[in-house]
Length: 330
Image (tube, rainbow, N blue to C red; front, side, top):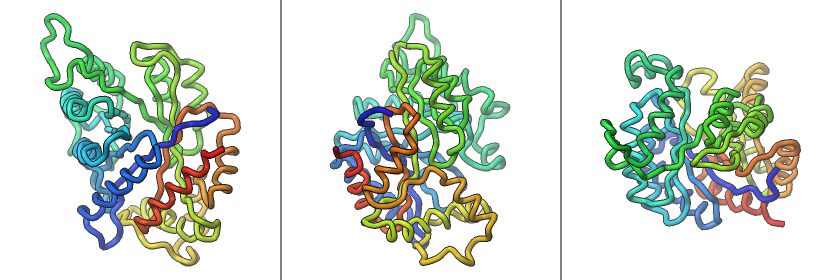
């Protein structure tokens, strides 16, 4: 583990049950501003489609909105699901964002569609999908690089902006590709805890320096429920349990208020599945989370931690960032 990894946030813009998207995005702005005040490094937004309760489908639009409402924190995609988009469109969007907010934009790329197969077909270019990912990444890199003599297709804006490209993954595939291309890498431990040690090791062991990056640089995403006590954290965590349970059942993903007990809401098999999904979840006060981080990172080298914080009350969610911030003191 890095002695003092930077802290960042991943935002899904989750809509509270009965709330509006407008209110959700106002809360996201307040959340990002609070993170910036505390010195968090990045605020990334995920791309999801056709999911009731998740309002981050127009990812580049939200990145521009958050960047415009903050001053110093880096803002980016965690990530853009590249099979859904022509690389030229993404180069133009992120080139424009970089021109508006110089030195603050990150382009994280994912290989999955971030939705169900029917919606993926509605989004995707005909005949192309995840198998095209390495070629699409290379195309995007070329479009964001300085213009070459005779270049026929140009991203305007975009060319020459060199927006930093990140590869995101939940398996070994993107770890290997990021290492081969000399790109920074982020592992999705917030929903795929099983392979984080192996993926981060594969990335570091196989890293090849590039023009963008001379040394390997990795992020580990972790779910967190920080609170003033373990008892309160266990209560607040039932919001995330209910949402993952809804995901398993194919139900809308509205963020629901916490409950005193999950008994009667899930069966034993569902409980085990939710706990496996959230196996890396950090839970409790600053001291407890600090100990849990030490355990999670005991045999892992990582440069940055990126937290997902599913807490129903926006004020308690922002306070959770204060508690997380305390875990890196001393």
